[in-house]
Amino acid sequence: MARTTKKKVVTRKKTAAVAKKPARKAATPRLVILVATRKGAWLFHGDAKRKIWRTDGPHFLGHIINHLVLDPRDGRTLLAAAKTGHLGPTIFRSTDFGRTWKEATQPPAFTKAPEGSKGRTVDHTFWLTPAHANEPGVWYAGTSPQGLFRSADGGITWQPFSIINDDPQFRAWMGSEQDGTPDGPKLHSIIVDPRDPAHLYFSMSGGGVHESMNGGRSFTTLVKGMEVVGGFDPANIGFHDPHCVRMCPSNPDRLYQQNHCGIYRIDRPSNEWTRIGKNMPKRVGDIGFPMVVHPRDDNTVWVFPMDGQSVWPRTSPEGKPAAYVTRDGGKRWQRLDAGFPESQGWWTVKRQSMTADTQDAVGLYFGTTSGELWMSRDEGERWTCIARHLPEIYSVEVAEV
Amino acid sequence: MKVLIPSSLLSYTKAPEVDASGATLAGLLADLDRRYPGLRFRVIDEQDRMRGQMRFFVNGEQVFDINHPLQPTDAVYLVQALSGG
Image 1: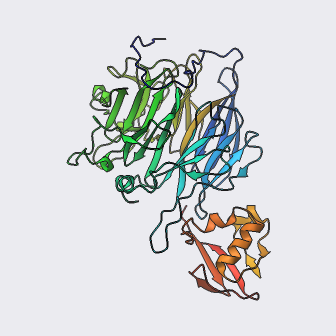
Image 2: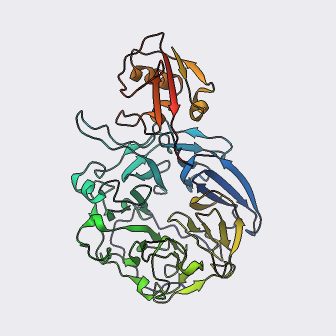
Image 3: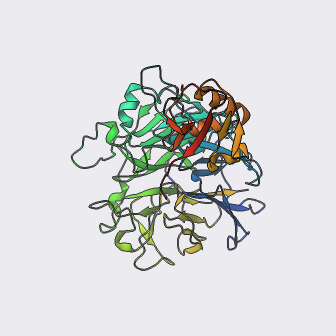
């Protein structure tokens, strides 16, 4: 496996060592794919070779599940961000891998507005991030419309977090509910620096990328180098539409981003993103939703391009599905489509619907809006369909327990 | 008073009709939430507005004000509106 030789610049305080994950744990972990869909959630329990997957589900049949995440700190707490077509949003919690679920007693909700003014309402919780390894039970949640929330009790009660939910400047950047993605503007990509629990990032569609060095007391924008739709002013943070931002586990100073307008990389402490997607084949382009980082190699990332031309079909370009990988930080890209349909494959893969495990070789997993779940056991060289006929897939996570 | 519960809330009440009390619709919902924790937030948002796909009927008439007064003999229906496929 290629490893970076780049000198790492670490300027911020270190309160915890970066967890160096071994290529393979002493005992082979059990892998569970967590699939959230528009009509419920499924768990796929894998064998040691990642070849046989036992289907467990549906959980919450008919509920809209935007994200299903396992707490890596205790290896047993599952949180599901849920709502239904009729009912308001909530969080469900399980500590026995979905055999039983209990509802949060206080789900994410905006502060009630003073009499006479119009307050905001959480439509759904979109994104869940377990906090730092040294903060057991702490979680962050991003909502639609854009809001940032925190739980300190493992997801049972949630409170608005930081100043951004009601800050006039942030509210202006968030725009109205018509300024976001088709099912509502979203706060996503909440990232916690493994070296420092107070160093946080989050992103908004729309509304840019933001960083805090002080545990959320204040944030600074991080959009330099990012492009916006032609004709709009990139100085207006509200025009920036990051789709998915990921931090490299092996090098927390390096982040990659799949944006509405290209693929980017940043190496901190630089504040400027570089559009590495310009090196993608022109006929494929560099538009898409997910961004997947390698667990041990900060030069390797995967994307799943979509057609962002004309009316934005958001499907695989020319109906030929493919992932792309770079192994040199974005200079060169390689097409990975072995096993996919060669034509008439009009797939859409949403921003939370593609992920990687930490095995050697790395396993990749993604789900389509047409309800197919695919994986690769060899870093994308060959793809296999695990499940078909699921509802529209909203997120795919892989848990190692 | 009798409160008719839609199927989407049976996971809370376990019954399609329950007894609850309140001098207003808001009071009734607070009582329902005491009996069935979490129910209120699924039908009323954090700004005390009725959620878009929920309807409230008192004695057969739809009401839109959460402070609508209630009598002990009133029949209250919580109804889910059509919400797409």
